[in-house]
Figure: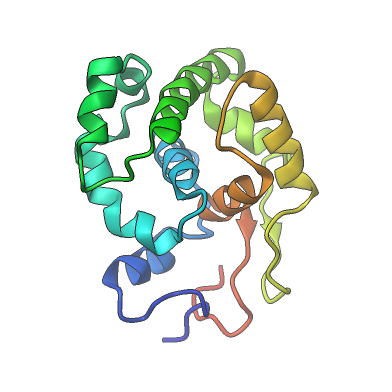
Length: 181
């Protein structure tokens, strides 16, 4: 099988993510939050590092339940800071809690986070198959700016571009990839 060149073919986690999730449209708020959380933890790190820690994050973070995460307190932050299986960055952990609260506010305003995020493309997928890979674009900058304005953190335009790929709003497979939608 031909996959995008960024996939480490020796890592089953990366293969599974690329083949079954990446650039496939997702609309479920639970999944959208999980990927937003993981992307925010990726800042300054490799995606492979995050994907390899995904199950540890799932266990440590109540299965990415934003309702529970939004209520985390200092005791829980201290517990997470001791967990060697996840990224132990106090700023990212605190941002995650804040982002969960903002996520809920967006849900109330738009009916779902999915309605909010997909409204930026009028619920359409942006096809970039076979084009030169980029790190951000006007759309990711616009969404990043809006999320920052709402109070989210670790949602810069590069992180958001990667997020848009991960949830399938941007289909960015390389032209020789067998997984082009």
